[in-house]
Length: 243
Image (cartoon, rainbow, N blue to C red; front, side):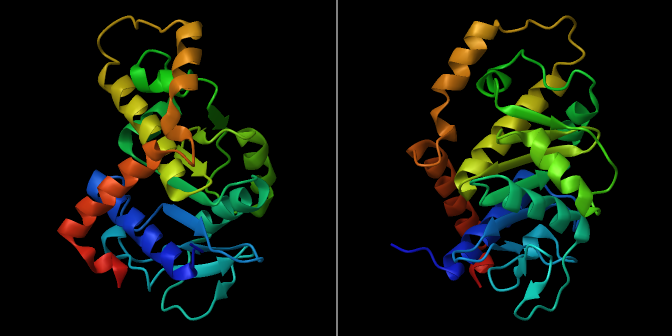
């Protein structure tokens, strides 16, 4: 069945509510974007000024790659979000959904010179799947876009150094699977940081774990089933995101 813009709006609004449920919010900041069907590269982004718990299918804002608002909206879009997401949507093949967070543990790992540790179940599944991009300040300058794309180099999980976490995927559930796994790896790394010397996982085992981590396949049931379970939870709490 063909996906419509309305379908995308409902899916993305649900995602904002899921982030709110998980505590992945930053007041009115940060972004999740989703490309809408069609020949032109257009995508949906959150209305700047609303908390994630207030986002609905109808108040999401549609923009083009130049940040022009398409149609009517009572809200602007945040340039710091648009510039970063636009660069990835346009420059990374298959990046139909882009997610960015400033969680405490994600930001903490982003400040670490060594980056993500190779010492836990979740980081092992991300072997050769994590990219790093050096901090250049607030992402409001379009000239940074090509450098972000170059840094990503096709990897779906991204640590923006001194900044936060990012993921992208062919669909929402794949992007979420990457971000959730990266976030869990950061949570465990920070929680265990005061326990003494780390027990690093052997590179061969990490490679095997990454290969066996089927939840990252955009077309498999793993990421889709997890994401749909979270949507059912949101529907039980507050289905107003569908409005």
